[in-house]
Length: 125
Image 1: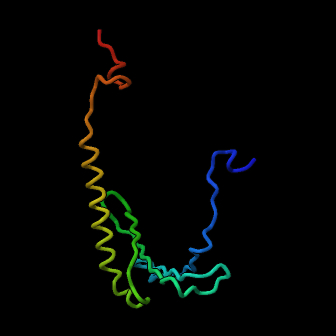
Image 2: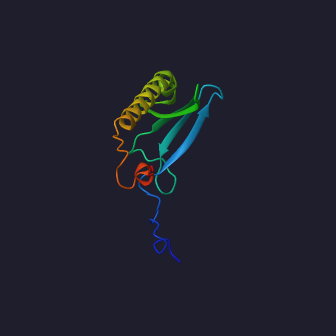
Image 3: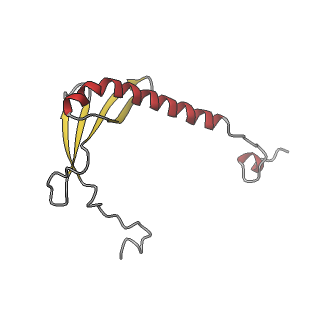
């Protein structure tokens, strides 16, 4: 039975978008990933930029908040220097997204007697 028979998408690796991932960490504050573009044979691809990604976790009253973010940098030293500001920006973005979700949730109109609602199925004598 093929994946199409199961209704699953045909998943393939894009050979034009391959990266070699290198991980750097201080085992305390976070992790930096250097994403080096490569060709299908694994050789460095100088036509595409190297990417830097940061990751950290912050303790909040609600538990651990994982943060992942891209850092625009020309080399590892610059990415390390930009790491603290990138964490702050990622946290601000996460807070804004949570506030937006809260606003959207609060703006939903609840109609208790709408057809199909639980309230419409409850009948009082």
